[in-house]
Each structure stands twice: as C-alpha cells, then as structure tokens.
Image 1 (spheres, rainbow over the protein chains, first blue to last red):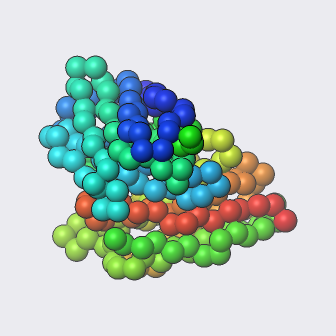
Image 2: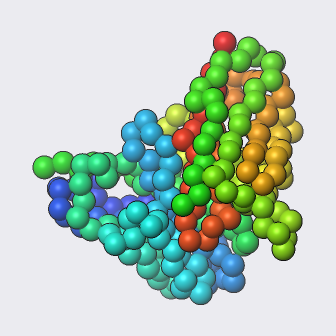
Length: 119
Length: 114
C-alpha cells in the first residue's frame, strides 16, 4: 500500500523560502519508472502541477515557476523535498505530493498541507 | 504549455441520470508511437486529495465503479457518469501527461445533484 504525507510550515512570510517534505512508504523512488510529483491548489481553485522527480534523478518543473522551485530526493529516507523561494500571498495553497506510476502519471496522493503566506 | 479546457464549469444532474463532462486540449495528447492518449481524469471531493479515476483516456483505475467511463482521442475527451449517485458529488479534473516538460490540469467541473 502506497502512502504519502506532506510536512512543513503552515505559515510563511512573504519573501521567505518554503521547504516541504514528502515522506512516503510502499514504494522506492529508486525503482525504475517511479517518480514523485508536487501539485498545489489555492483555496477554491484548480490543481496546478509544480514539479516531478524521477527514479533516475531527472527533474521537471512548471515553466512558470521553474526559477523558484527545487526538487530533491533522499532515497534512503523515502523522502522528496520541494523548496520554493520568494513566497508571495498568491502562493497560499494546499500542497500535495503524489506517486508517479511507471509510464503513467500521479496515482496515489498525500492528504496535502495548507500553506498560508502572510506577514 | 498544453492548455486543458473543461466544459461546463458546473452541472447539476438528477440522481440516476447521466452526467457528461468535456475536456479539450490545445494540442493533441495522442502519442503516435504508442497509440495512447496521455489523458487522465481525477475526482476530488471536498477536503480530500484528488483520486485517479481514468487514465489513457479510457482505462478505469482499479476499484473505480463502471458507471465512470472515459472516451475521446487527440484533443477532445469526455468523462461520463452513466447513473449519478450521491457519492459522485465532486469536482472532476482532466489532466494531460503527454508533455513530460509540463503537466497541466483543466480548471475543473463541479458536479452537483439537481
């Protein structure tokens, strides 16, 4: 059974850097074809894909946020970390991490963490 | 980016009736070498994460009731709920994973009971 859980600060100030950790079980991010992605959802709005990291350490970022995002993985800890710099109130959202199935897309999702950006 | 546009934004359907949601992509998501459409549908209920319903445009995820079906190819896709149940009230999103450089989602369609 695949499970994922997001952790990190729920309140950040404008201009600060957000660091979120996705801790997972039931799979290894070193298995061929597997990946972990991040998606966010502002309150009442649509889903927005942010980034995905793959088993071979290939990384893909949303073009509109590429300059602010970094995704890394720690295979030994079963964790994937997303950092987003220069946070703005418009970045207030629930941030989800999710498992990427071999040759497919995101299938299992964490419960999400609501991050509020406010001074 | 491939832009995904859903219609309608919301719809109200009577219990037991059919619900149909459309999704149009700004470019084809059909990969010629595999003959597969890189299109998925998710269901999101209030306070919950999205749940994968359909992938490859028409393949139901394990455990998804067969009243949910997906169809379409290229740029035009449809999610159909053949007989709406109370537990199907949710927001539904289409999602393309064709472009490995940038995945995108539709804006969502809210399904309610009439």
